[in-house]
Length: 384
Image (tube, rainbow, N blue to C red; front, top):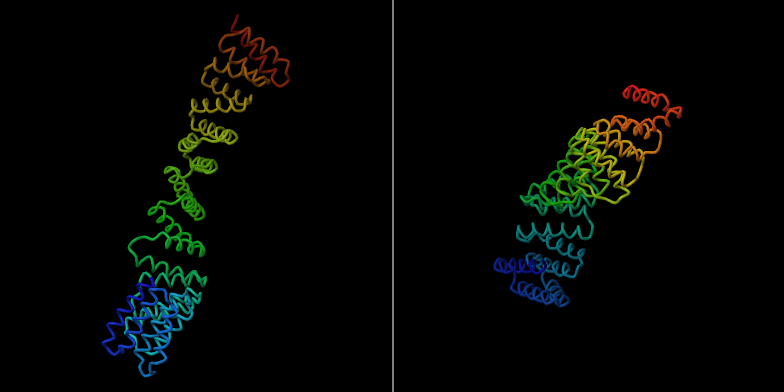
């Protein structure tokens, strides 16, 4: 950067040497430039200081260029406060060529940011803009100043301006705009910015989740779920809780089939797998996907060995009049409710002796005795 500045400055000096700058001044600037390129900074400053001291105050043109050259020395040695003073001194002579003076204003604005004097930077940028069109770089510098001063409204105005001055979409600028929109609670604008980021860049799932949250906050549940679903479809959602939430949201919106597909795609550790399977079975039953529900319930039974799951499978088979499978699963249930189901399955298959045995035992139970006697009467009627 410094080499480019020095080369440009030297070019300016050579051009303007013929317009009033003394050859001594030009040679001094040329010599100091060479010293700085060689990193002989002390020598560079020495030759400039000597020439400044020798130059009459009436030679404002020479002095303006010499102080400008001295500013480059201070920049190279990271002494930004002194660099600003040198630039200000150069401007004070009102002798620099117009384009060079304008660029000096911008240099002071940049250096002021380096020393965290943001208000000073803004003042010089205003002067710069009064003499030069707003550029992408100068608009961005305005944005940086207002961000640093924690003035979000002004910062947002300038981030918008910066984006408008560049054809290529810049992710970092969009991220700045998004942060400001969220800070100012401009949710609709923030949602648009997030949508642009998601569309234009390959970003992580946090952007999708944030956009989904914003739509939810604005009361648009449909868009909120759609954004999460799109993240799922491109493989960004892969954690258990994320997928369970998506399945639940799809279910609440009446998209049970989609919810089932999400749950079926999940593969997780056994502890959480049980929760997934239980939810999946409920959705399958609601969607009347009976065969799928049976398969899921059988997986649950393998994991838990719970009688209630075996009973539910037996009940589903009973509803389908598949009495053999009903019997198989009812036998796994040793409580009275399971025994009642077993007796019914046996009776429907005309396995009357076994059914009578089951119902006779149940007739001794206060809760189930009436149903047991009813089935015993039915068997007696069928066998006579």
